[in-house]
Amino acid sequence: MFARVTSRRHLQERRAARVLNERPLRVANEELRILISTVQDLINRLGTAADPELKRLRKRAEASLARARAAIGDSGAQLGDQARQLAGQGQDYVRRRPLTSVAIVALGMLAIGLVTGRALAPE
Image 1 (cartoon, one colour):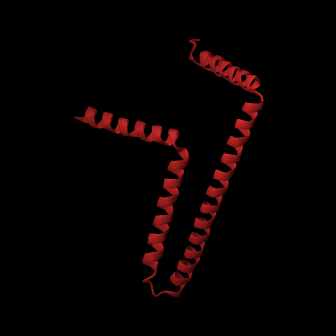
Image 2 (cartoon, rainbow, N blue to C red):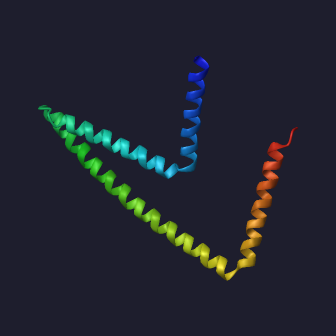
Image 3 (tube, rainbow, N blue to C red):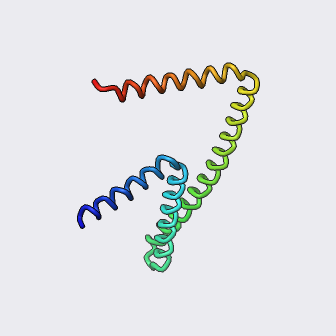
């Protein structure tokens, strides 16, 4: 029974690690969403407090949360624009110099093969 629980946990950890490696931006966005949701919940709970200090802290937290949401939205749009621009430049380069592009890819693959071959070779 214990082995089954351990293996199940191990499989869940492996799945989580795979998702993190395959989709780091999606995971980061989800973590930010959870953080914002948690802070929003905290702000809502502080809304019923009568203490003036808690009210002041609530207003500061709301302002910080609004700034964080705006920054995340702006940086996400800016990152998307930069990625599209970089992809366009890469396509233009490949169209202008196809043989050079193939040579660069071949050299990169050779370098990766040498590095992984050395890493896998028994010492």
